[in-house]
Image (cartoon, rainbow, N blue to C red; front, side, top):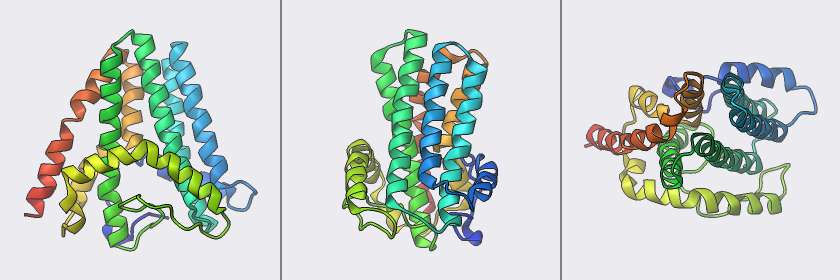
Length: 255
């Protein structure tokens, strides 16, 4: 099941794990497995990938990063199949992502003996990239009656859905807001008119999807395999410059 109606779907380069994720969700539909279990499994998968990087098992790390992306798609698919969307799952998913991003870049910094400053700068850029993509994607989903557990503006604790506890939603929202709030504010200030824009073409969204976490992990995995680990942090610092190009393109399209 897609997060968007068929008419408005685009080729999402960061979502290559969804076909396999759908199959996993179908296999688990009639079991006791929950989307939360899948989210926790991709968190473990990502942690094991960082251990593999420390041990210089780069092929294994790359495979695990791809598997993480597959499981990341599977949790949402399972929630839709079982008709159990939840804010608990939505926030836990995002919190797990940023924890893994921090661990991943910290591990790459360690094995490359790089600069702490540039590593922090790369992490900042990595998060801004993902935030811009999610910002545009959530606008589309809300505009065309797609998945609505994500909101354009995450400023208030949402009311718990059926099957989840408000205290869990509140706790996870506060953690989410601590990690993601600053990035949301920066992107919104850079392109606050996007919410009012009339057009986000499919080709444009496909291009911006290179900022999605799945594609970012694919790049990291590829650079590890081809012994380019020393260039991972500089790459994501430079890649962040595309944020301003994409925002400029969005404004041009809606001028």
